[in-house]
Each structure stands twice: as structure tokens, then as C-alpha cells.
Figure 1: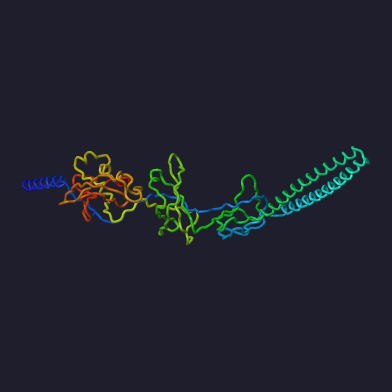
Figure 2 (figure 1 turned 180 degrees about the vertical axis):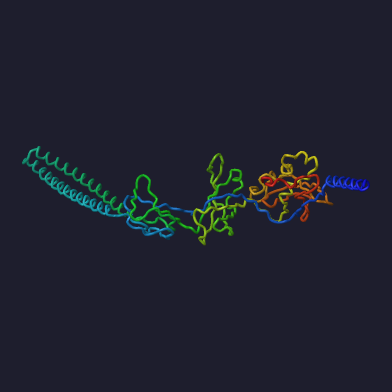
Length: 419
């Protein structure tokens, strides 16, 4: 019995020692690699905005009254000068008739004043001859001269009254003409704020009755660009955008205006950039939200690195101890691409020398990582331009490490660096 117990004890001891050394062994190190490729890199600036017609006219009224007729509705096509609504003209017709009567009366009074003036001038002429013959006195002659001057003043007053009533008549006719609301441009009615029977009042601010888009085949997007990216935006740069209504379709446009006035919202400074859009098929509607990407830099036939290669750094046991309980140092090892060289990076064309950055990546040679110095340029979410290095197309560079003394994968933080 003791023999069996001794043998069992020895077997358990051997198994324990074997298990201890098995679990204490250093795990095998493996590396995940990616190949250096050649292709095109497009760097963009992302922003959002809303679609609108290039020219939108708000149509109001200059007179007050009750809407009697509506000739158009939403989405109606209108021509310049076309009647789109009419205010009840009864009061305006009455005003025209009244002004017309006042004008005719004033003209009659003017004619009477002119007749009286002519009679006073004849009397003065006759009295002048009679005074020379001694038939009348000087007082009679002076009275006749005063009558002439008075008649001339009466004519002037009558002429003023005629002008005043003529102006009143013109105003009444103008108000009557304004009772018919007409379209000022060719376009499409995109908004109607009135109905038949509604009373509109024209006071200091003209009420908006209709909104007419002059031409929906030409639209624009006003996007807000962050102050950190506005220096990269240039006129005539290409832009692409999507809208929620057509998620699978990409639309194209170009930058036509960069406004200098800042827009400050909660201490965040942005600038408005206007992107023109062709809408010949009329798919796009005013007010749609557009997710815009402005192409700020593009390079063809260049070597490309994956962003993870610049974040990678081989970890040792010492590194693992330092980062125990903290953040993985591989995400903050300082091996970051040039600032401003990814989604929000680069200027149009080649990047200036001041934006190139010396860094390093690791080449897998004979199963071990070998550091290689590189200079990077523009970038986007998936690729970074390789400007200067001994690397060539097809080389395997390390993007991730598994095993060894690490307890975490050393491919960088899950979020990655901010380019």
C-alpha cells in the first residue's frame, strides 16, 4: 500500500512541477503585418450643412386687406409678373373713385381761377387807358391791379390742389394694383403662408406670404467648418456629399465662397463655406441635411502606410510593468503621423515641408521587428503617405503584436490617434 501511495505522490509532484513551468513559460510572440501599397490618397475636411436654393425670394404685400383669391399652391411653377394671389379690391376701387372725383374738382377750380385771372387782366388793361384819359381815379386803377395779382395767386393755389389730388389718385391706383400680388421672379413656390379669407396687414414689416425658389436646378450648401480646418479650404475645391434620402448615392459640388465672418456658438468658432451643387434631376430638396467632404489634398501613385503601423511599438516586460493598471503606452508612444495629415489634414496639392514628420515603423525581418525611419505626408482614415524611407512597395510592416510579455495587444488604443 505504501508503494502505491509513494508512486502516486511522485506522479502528482511531477505533474505539478510540469504544470508550473508550462504556465510560467513565455508565450510565443506573433505579429500581424500589412503590406506597403501604392495608390491614391485623398485628404478631406468633413462638415455638415443644409441645402438651399441659390436665390430664394420672399413675397409679401404692400397693402392690407383680406385674401380673396389664390392662384398658386406649394410646388407651383410661376413666371415673373404672374398673379399668385389677390386681396379684396373693394376698398381700393372706392379710394380710386374718390381720388378721381377730387382730382376732377381740383381741375375745375383751376379753370375757374384761370378765367378769373383773365377777366382781372382785361379790367386792368382797360383801367390803364381810362386812367390816362382821366376818366377814373388812381384808386380805381390800384384796385384793378390788386385784383390781377390776387387772381394769379388763386391760379397757383388751384394748380397746387390739382397736383395734390393727382398724387392722391396715383396712390389709390397703385394700391389697387398692389391688391394683385405677382411673382417677382421665375421659379417654384416652396412655401405658402396664407389661405383664402385670411387678413394680412402691411405695417412697418412686410408679411411674408410666399417663398419662391428661383431655380432648384442650381442649389448650394452652407456648411460650418471649424477654425482649425478653414485654412485648408480653397475656392474651386471639389466636394462630395450624401443626404439621408439617398444614402447610397454620392453627389458632387465645388467650393464657391469662403465667408470671413466668424460664427461663435458656445465658444466654438466656425466659418461658413458655400458649396454649389447641380440638381438637374431635382432629387435634392431645400432644407435637406448634407454630410459634406471637401477634398483638400490629393496625391496619386504614392506609397501608403496603414495608420496602425505608426501607432505600433514593440512592448517588453518593463513596458508591461509600467503600464500595469494604466493606459497602454503603445497609444501614446509619440509615434503619431504629422498633425493635420489625416481626415482634416493637408492642403491642396503637395504638403509643405513644415508638415512632414520624421517617425518610425517596424519591419518584420526574420521574425523580429526592425525599426525603420519614415517621413509621412497627407493622410486619411485608411492610409498615410510615405514620403521618404528605405521601405518599398510590398514590404511587410507590423501593425499588431500578440504574445510575449505583453498582456495587451500593442496595436495602439482602440480609438487611435487623432490626425
